[in-house]
Length: 293
Image (tube, rainbow, N blue to C red; front, top):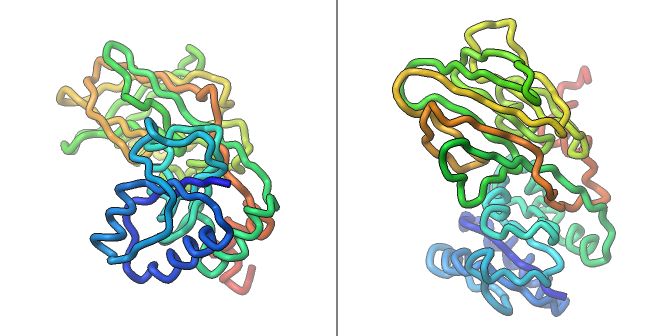
C-alpha cells in the first residue's frame, strides 16, 4: 500500500507524534510519498528526519495510486492539501498538530488507534461538497474551488459594501455589510460559525449565506439548497473588493460578478468509529462542560 503525506509547518513539540506516525507506516511497510517542502521544513527547522519512499512537489507529480492522503497540521493545512494535491478520488485524513481541528480531527493521543482503524478499513467515507466560483469579465483563479467557503470582503477602507445576492436569478437581498460568506456544510463550522451562522452536518445538501456585520440588525443567515446558482453583485467606494476562497484571496473590480455553484465533484474524508460528527461537535465546542448540560 502507498499513501501520501502533506504538511506545511509543525512545532518542535510535535516531533514525538511525528516519529510515532512515520514509525507506524515504516513498521507496516507502507510506502510514503512525502510532500518535499514539508520534508525540507522538518529537516531544516525541526531537525527531524522521517521515513519516506518518494517525494511529490505539487498536484503535477502526485501519485494517483495513493490509497490515502494524510494532512499533518491544523484545518488550514488540510485546506492547503486540497489546493496543492487536487485529487478528489483519494480520501484526505487530517492529523491534528494545531488547535481546534474540525477537519484535522485525529489527535495525538488517539494516533495509533486511528491508524489501526484506517489500515484495517474500519471507517466510513464521508463525501464533502465543494464550491465552484466563476468570475465575469476576467479570468478565473487557477483553482477556482473552495471546500469551506467563499467570502466577499471590503478592502482596507472603512466603507461597507453593498452586496446584491440572487438565487437562480431571483433577487434574495441587498446586504449592506462588511462582507458576505457563502459556506458549504463543511464550512459551517468555520468562518460562518464565528459570525453566527448555523451548523450543518457534512452530508447536508445546502449552502449557508451569512452576512458579516450587517448594517440592518434584522438580517440573518439563510440556508439554501446546494443545487442553486448564487450570483453576487458588489458595489462600494473605490475600485476593488476582496474575494476569498478558503485561505486564498484576490482583489477584483466592482464590475465583476461572482457566480457560485456546487462543484461537480466532492472531497472524500474518513470518519472513524470513535469520531462521529456530533461527538466531534461536543468535544471541539466543549458542549457539556457546563454541568447544567
